[in-house]
Image (spheres, rainbow, N blue to C red):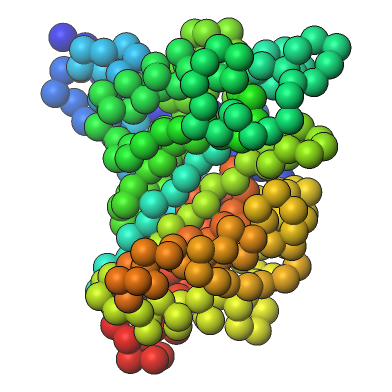
Length: 339
């Protein structure tokens, strides 16, 4: 019996890439092969030479269609099978392989905001809701908006076998978060992209839209981030490697390099207010949500664990943020002999 494979890929839209997908019918038992698409319609080719290639790299059950149907995440290649310039996964793969012996792990906290029409879900027509405060991890129809979509998305992610580790309501009406990980770099990034696709697709059925805009509502509201938790084997066993990693993220031009790849519009979110550090300053501290990088209080007590980079935007490319953190921190730990 035939089955459906939903090919999913990241396009070349700038400054923030979008997800695309299309369906292929395959014979039972057949593995999803490479497939072509029109790159001129996704900002990945010119019309006179528009063919681009989809190479499957990760697949999981399709929880929406069910049965034997699958979701297939793909890398984008040129027709000579070289990585396309928009293919950030290939760059991460090189770095992840180079430092694999350090056993890096990530947990990414994906914040997002539901919209109904032109307003965040829960914002009244012609006005504004009560100030933030009661919405975070709240309960009740006067404070929580979109829970039905969130629960359906969680169920879909679990049915797909993704490494979802939690969900919670965030500080603004219609704003939520899910967490992926802890997983190795490629796995966490692949699964986050699939979880994002499932979020958009699930929301379709409820007639609402989803945005990863880092500042979805102007004014005195928190932005939307993708706080990125990171550790290596050495960090999970001792405190000195944790300090080495924090120091490395602030050395030389590293803060500028990282922030430049942490999502478009980052200066609108990292203002020094609303639990952020200024985008052009680097700091780290224990239990400090106003720092660029936070060391959780329990980590200081245990003298081992992980760090949280609080700078990445909700719209960050997870292949980029994991590549940069692994490259910076693992190189510093290697140089310090803390591996």
